[in-house]
Image (cartoon, rainbow, N blue to C red; front, side):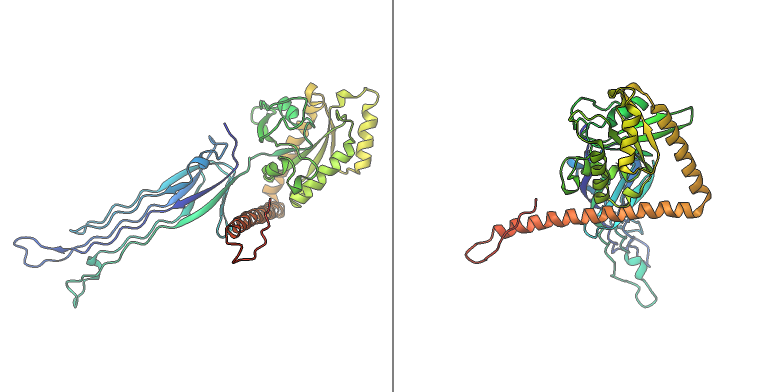
Length: 396
């Protein structure tokens, strides 16, 4: 299945039904009167979180979603039927943004979470509502109002506890394969991972956490190079990052330079995400002579001036991976407990998530701005050059 994590759709709620203009006229009934019923309310559009979905591919083929209109009122004081609401399933982890205002409408983070994205039109009133002692035959009704119409942008971010960060071919996919049931593609060349992969790391009957592997970053990613920047947003929901470093690159490049480049690109993408706790995971130690492993690892840590936890592993042979996942599970458990018991810790976590959402909105605004500028430039290019002296700049 094709992985799609962004989509633009149009949602339109149903219109309200018009009120009815009617008078009671029956044989042998000397006193009739107004009996026009009300119209029905228009249906609303809702999004609902579904854990059976893991991509937005369906929204690439169907972009327009409309709820049912309310039916008009009828005589004999009969109200029109309300329009049926429309429920659209989206993957858990989907952020809903109004493309016109760039307002974040909702964040669908739970299975079964329901979010209203378009309000149905109000019903119209029949003439029975307007009778009075001085107006016994009212010919006044009200029309139903139009349903709300919105242009929405859906952005899916995978729901994971731990995210893997590193250069292509650093061994991230091998690591997630070795500690979970996930089976991402693994090969001895860069860019084998093209889409995010999720794996559930199980440590006991009821002890587990979710790990996310995204395509590797490369230097210059913040300027659009490679694939990693596009998928870095999937790490914004994680609580802990594993910075995976290949200690013996096949191209004999410097692991310290590679790690520094990743930290720079991470900060350029999201300063708030760069504040997340990060553990240094030195991978592929099995490629070094046994008597050199400790000295090489110590030198990398010294040159990076790394102050956080450091783990030495070989993902392909599972050396050191058990200690890594056990430590991660303990840290995640302690963090959740702290947030449940300490209101300040919960507020710090919520503040960090809000800042990352604000950064995401700013990125979306910049991307939409570039798109609109490109369209405007194309329109200008179609004008007659004899009448308009326009210099066209194309934004890539």
